[in-house]
Length: 410
Picture 1 (tube, rainbow, N blue to C red):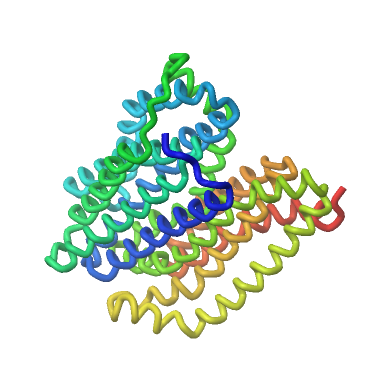
Picture 2: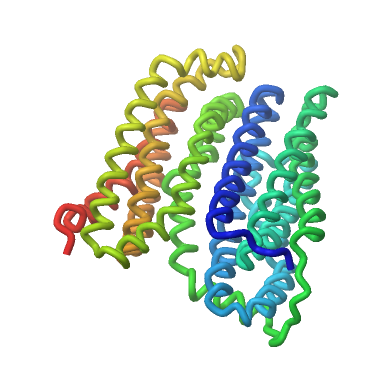
C-alpha cells in the first residue's frame, strides 16, 4: 500500500484532484462546442450528460457509502470492496441501459451510443478504483491518476482537433480511452494486497449501502429533476437550440470548481464547528459565507451583463451568438446552486437533511409542470428562465426552512 500523506498535504491534493477534474470537464465541453458541428455537439453534450446522470447514482449508492462505511469499519473494507467490484458486473450493464433509455431524447446515433457505453463502463471502474484509494487515504497517488487522465483526455481531443476528426463518437471514444489510462495507471499506483478476511455477497453490500444512503440517492434524483434535466428538455426544440444552450452551460461549468470544492469541504467543516462551538457558531459561519457568496455572485452577474458577448465570441467565434443570453441569465441560477451547497452543509450539520430532498422535490415539480410548458411556449428563453427558477427554488426553500435557526439558533 502507498503511504498516506500528512493531513494538510492530503487536503491540498484532494482540492487539486477536484480542480483537475472540473477543469478537464470544462475544457472538454468548450473544445467540443468550438470544434464539433452543431448537430454533433448537441448529441455529444447530451450523451455526456447522460453518463453524468448515471454516475450520480453510482456515486451516491456505491462509492460515497463505501467511503463512509469503510472508514467506520476499516477491518471490513477489503471484503466490502471485493463485493462491490463483483457488483459492477451488474452495475455497468444497468448504467448502460439507463443511457440507452434516455438516448431517444437526442443522441440515438449507434456509434455514439457504443462509445458512450464504453466511456460509462470505464468511468464506473476507474471511479471505484480511485474512491477506494481515497477511503484508504491514498490521496496523493489518486490525484496523480486524475491528473494523468485529464492530460490524456485533453491530449486525445487535441489530436482529434489537429487531424480534423469531428465525429461525436470519436470524441466520446477519446474520453473512454482517458478513463482506461487512469484505470491502468491506478492498477500500478493504487493497488493493495490486503487480504479479504470476510467474504460478503455483492447483494448484501449493495443492500446495506442503499439503506445507509437511500435518501441521498432519492435526493440525487430530484436534484436532477429540479435543475440538471433542462438540456434534455431543450432537446425538444432541435439540435441548434440544444447546442446553443449547452454551449452557454459549458462556460458556466467553470463555477463547478468552486461548487464542488465547497461540497467536499463544507459538510465536515460545519459539523466540526457545531461540535466544537455549538449551533450559534455554525449558524453565524453560514450567515457570513452566504453573504460573501451572494455578494460575489452579484458582482459576477453584473460583469457578465457586459462580458457575456465578448466571452462567447472569444471561445466560440460566431458559432453560438445566442449562447451569450444563456450565459448572462443562467448565471443567476448557477450562483443560486452555490448558495444551495452552503445551505445543504448547514442542514447536514443541524440534522435537517430532509430539507435537502424536499427542496429539490419542489423544484422537480416546477420543472415537470411549468418548466416544460414555458420551454414549449417560449422556446430557449423559456428554458433559460425555467432553469434559473429550478436552481433558485431549492435554495429559497432551504433558506426559508432554516431561517428561524439561522436568525435565532437554539
